[in-house]
Image (cartoon, rainbow, N blue to C red; front, side, top):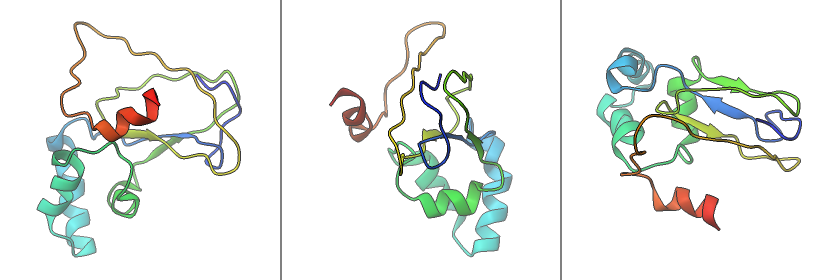
Length: 125
């Protein structure tokens, strides 16, 4: 839930639907690899195999997934749900701070294996 009005300038949320599994976005990645002249395995490894937190490689993510990217902008109080096993991130605020509240729910214990220590530093600092 956004606690402040949020735009792409003030840190909106970005989600890439269909990226929950390699198989579901493989056709798009293969097509974009051919269009951009980039090796498919390089794209796949960067997106799904390298420990990352969706920050960095922004040009590659935009080139490959820009046509499917959803950006959630809205007023304070806007709430949304997503399957966060897909690629997602908060867009870094450029003009004003962003305040938001988030909660995780599910069955069983969360699997934090493979979570980048760099990502955790942002939340526990």
